[in-house]
Length: 208
Image 1 (cartoon, rainbow, N blue to C red):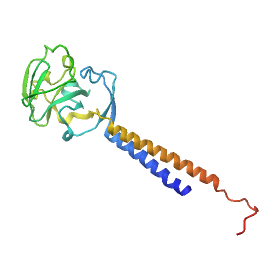
Image 2: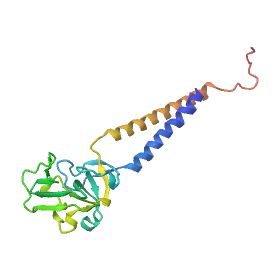
Image 3: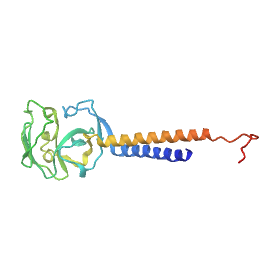
Image 4: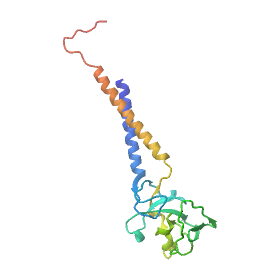
């Protein structure tokens, strides 16, 4: 039993430590503070953000992005509509990318924002055209068209909001397994120590 414990305890601790290191390196938890992504995300919602580089960005991703020239030091949560080279046009809540109208079920604004004018831009390479889901209350690319067609630097992306819980669930399972193995290992070691006790001096010994 002690031999098994010597294997299980280190293995469990290794799984637990590895999961913790991987999670801290690749994910972070943030709280939504703005109103630009309603109804998808509301103020006060807690989101798990997967840290990604510019090469992993996809159209439709909701990203946490920094644009110090527009939002000072505060990162904002917005949806990627166009990437470098895309032709994006729109008016009101209707958006077209490369000639194809977007199907956006996540946009539920009943009224179109009359303050945002029509736009027709080509997204510069290394940049992103981003919009908020709450189109009537989002300070997004539509309001910065004079600055590189309203685009944001792809290098400013700090992470992607996780809509699929598969990865966190796997990490949770591995971490939980590590805890269980470590506890079993420690319990087995303690039980083995109690079962094996040296005989006191002078105690009778069995003779084979």
